[in-house]
Image (cartoon, rainbow, N blue to C red):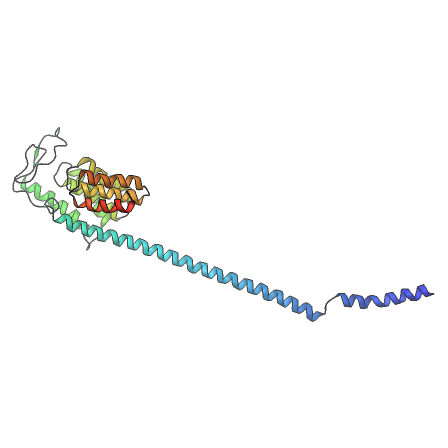
Length: 259
């Protein structure tokens, strides 16, 4: 009898114990709201991070564009200065020869120094006044494509390349080969520019453009991440052309690289 009463009493207490174990609905709702708020906060933080990343990515892209513009502007300015300096030289200024120029002979026309007889096996070919005017006209037309007013660098490269092929032994060919390199250099075609400048140094070492071409070779090597080769090129400018304007520039670059 007592056992039956105890069992009934125990069964009567079970709902109470169950109710005591489960939190009230209000508490469960409050806990759920806190979790939802936490998730919302994390979502907002993630959105903020994504927004900042987009802004940073945009800033990086803008900086990259500005850097490219500055590099192009720097090359334009450098080319303009180079042209102004080159214009003071007789060969670059297209000073007409007082007598018909002769390609490959042992004597030079008038007061103009004879071209280097690099290809003495080729028979001398006399150049008439009409031919000289045409050659100078083609050279000048290509040269003007590099002017600050036109800046038609790719067309200039095509024109100078054609000039070098058409007049391989003319006295203006070393200059044309040099400006071919400059045309590629300003267009950021560094491989083609390097090849063109190397031809100036190798084929026309006595040209007034050889020191500048050698200096540009060093610049391109340095830009390509080869400071050792660049240092050698700058040093060669000082050794082979100590009195050239490019020697001062090469000396500055060597100081920057650290001798």
